Image (cartoon, rainbow, N blue to C red; front, side, top):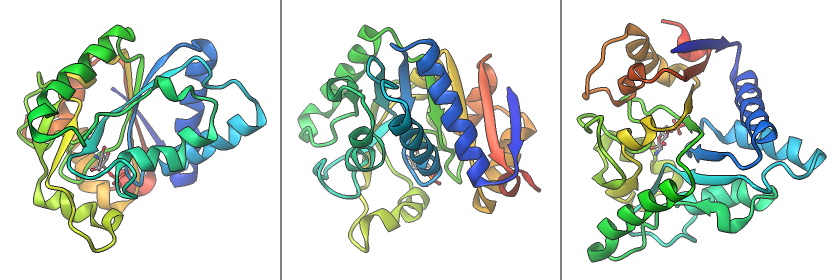
Length: 241
Ligand code: GLP
C-alpha cells in the first residue's frame, strides 16, 4: 500500500485526475471503476477541464460505477446516475454505451438479477483496470458497510444510519433511501489497481484506522491491505492525527 500525502484538496484532486488521465492515455480502452460522493468532485472537475483542452480522452474507455441507491429514479438529483451525468459523463467524450451504473430502479424482484447482470457486464469488459474509491467515515468503500464480507460481490445492501445521515444533503431534506446496490469488496479487490481518496478532518479517524494496518471486516477499507497495487491519496487534513 503506497501512501501519498498532499497539502490540500486541490492537490489531491489534481493528482487523482492525472492518474486517471495517464491511465486512459496509456491504455485507451481501460476499464475504470468510478466513485461518487463529495471527495471525487474535484477530480472530475480537473478531468473535465483537461479533456476540454485535449479531446479523445475517454473515447474508447469503459466505466463502471461502484454503487447506486435503490428506489429512486435515475433522474432524481440525489441519484448517483445524475451525479455522474452532471459531473463527468455529459462533459467528456465517453461513449454513453460504455458508461455503466447499477440500476436501482429495477423492482424488488429484479434487483438480484440486476446485480448478477452487472457482474457479467464487468467480466465481459475484461474486469476493472483502475478503480477510484472514496472512504466512508465508518470505513465503507462503495456502499460496503462494516461487516461486509471481503469476498462479497455486487448485491443489495441496507445502508447504515450514519451513512444515510452523512449523505442527507444530497436529498435536500427528503428521505434518504435505505438500500443501495454496490459492487462487493471481492469485486473491487479484483481491480488491477486501486486509488483511494480521502480529504478533510472528518476522515481523519478512518484514515488513521486504515494506516494502523489492522485487517477486519468491521472496517471495510482494511480489505485493501490484501491488494498489491493500492495507492492511498490523502490530504494533510485527513492524514494528521
Ligand atoms: C458515499 C459513497 C461512497 C463514498 C463515500 C464517501 O456513501 N457511496 O462511494 O466513497 O460515501 O463520501 P464523501 O466523499 O462524500 O465523504
